[in-house]
Image (cartoon, rainbow, N blue to C red; front, top):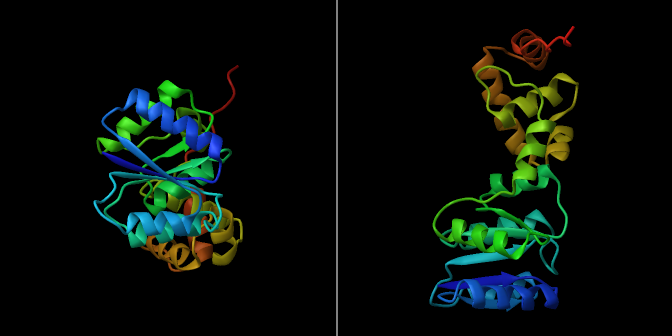
Amino acid sequence: MRILLADDHPLFAEALQALIARSLPQASLTAVADLDQAHQVLAGSPPFDLAILDLHMPGANGFAGLETTLKRFPKTPVVVISGAATAADVTKALELGARGFLPKTLPAKVLTAALQVVISGGTYVPAEYAQAEAAEAPPPVAGLTPRETEVLSLLAAGNSNKEIGRALKLQEITVKLHVRNIFRKLGVRNRVEAANAAARLRPPPESAPQ
């Protein structure tokens, strides 16, 4: 089993190398320090079973590097690592096609288990990020996906497609597709009708206990 780590922090690379040697003896780790090197290695053979990418290493440009990697090497499972991230960052990585998100602060046992989940075909997200995303999400609208609900909430607040894209870290064309789907699902023709429909369809807030 071949694993690629693309990260410019030597101490983390050394620690992960030791962890894999100890906990996943069937795996070998190749470490590089920037995105260009990662792509050169991934283009070789035999193929890698997993690529672990730091969002902030040289050449990565945040999510742009992840997006490029996923397009160039669609058959290689990719996991994102980062020293710090928000729940929105985690959601963005998964929406682009990453198979998981690994904070560098994960305990060794948890990190090992997370790698095994991804290698076996699953997706790993730390519970605290999933809980944070749920807490940040706007109230659901019947018939819409969570992402469409987020777009609708910003749309109803008067934001343009460009502003929505900036807030949710989405391409403007992606926002337009979400808006089109929202209009279709709600049976509305414009943004004003969509906002009115959202107000009608959202569940009322729970009253405080007496």
